[in-house]
Structures are given as C-alpha cells and as structure tokens.
Image (cartoon, rainbow, N blue to C red):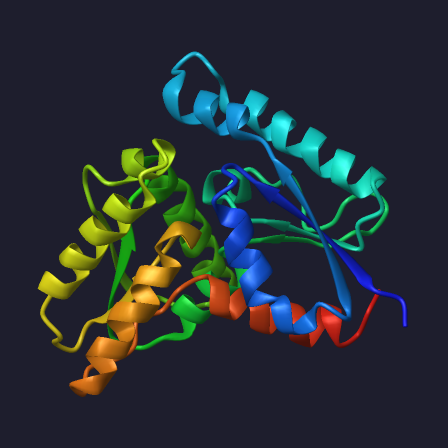
Length: 228
C-alpha cells in the first residue's frame, strides 16, 4: 500500500513530537516529513518593519518547497503561519491544513460561553480573525473570549519546556470549573491541557478542548483513510 506523505511545516522543532506521537498508530500508512522555519516566525513576531505580505510570501515559499518534495498533504503547525495561508490548496492540488482549521470549526459549533487560552501574543489576533471568518461562513455566532496567559511563551522559545508547562498548568488549575468551556489554542499547550482535563473530568467538570485532536480526526477521516 502506498503511504500518504505528510509534510509538516513548523515554526519551532518542539512541535515535531506532538505530530509524531499523535499519528504514531498510523505509522504503517503515512510518512511524516518535517520542515522547521524559526527565522520567519521570529521576524513576524519581533520585527515591526517586517510587513505581513512578506510573511505571507515566506509561508507560500515554504509550502511550495514541501510540495516539490512530494507531499500528498501539508500540515502547518504554527498558528502564526496558519493565519498567513494563501489558499486551501497549492497549484498541484495538494491540500494544506492549518493546525487550527478543524479546531476552529469545532469551536464555532459549540453552544454557550467559551474561553480560548493563548500563550503566544502574536497568534491571538490571527486566530480570532480566522474564527470569526469560520463563524460567518457557517452563519454562526459563537460566544468566545480570547485570553492570553502572560509571561509564558518566551519560556518555549528559550527551550524551557518544563517551566512553561508548570506555569500553564498552574494558570488553568486556578480557573473555576463553572459552565464556561475551556480550550487551548496552540499546539505547545496540548499536553498540559490533556493532563488538567483529566483532573477536571474526575471532579465532574468539562474537558478542555485542543487543536490537535480535531486535526488528527480530520486527517484520519479525509486524508489517511482515503489516500490521495
């Protein structure tokens, strides 16, 4: 059986493990190839003179490179890059899936109050813009509050994963259970969200949503089970 080649565009190498682990059970059906471009996200988030159109062109150039390497589908795991995707498909009809695409559709369909947590301040505006576009296209009006957890994302960029996860877990645990549905918006937050979600479920509260689970479900339903 021909394996589906999935090219993954990352802004930081720490995201590689999330995708590898999430799709490990499909290792016999897929071939993962990883591409990391940290320089582009550093310019997008730290250089005020770096225009958005330059960032969009940088993302497009990376997608074309991955396409040229023979990818059947491309996953963009950085929310900064996902906000700059030029189109749903490349010229050779290769599907491009942003990390938050399936997740935002799920958020749009939910009823009641929602709290969407971020650690990277540079991703909030783009993600919420994509959420609003998704909601408008579906004729929906989700009640979603975006909230940034300050002073945390720089720990990721410094390679301080343990400190980052401790700070994130402490913040989420301090939130009241209530009726608000919690979700995390970034891939780097998934492990902590799952761990704290188990704690919440044990005391009768709702689970914490994350962008990885809907992405994997989308790939299994639309791509892996029906190879291109």
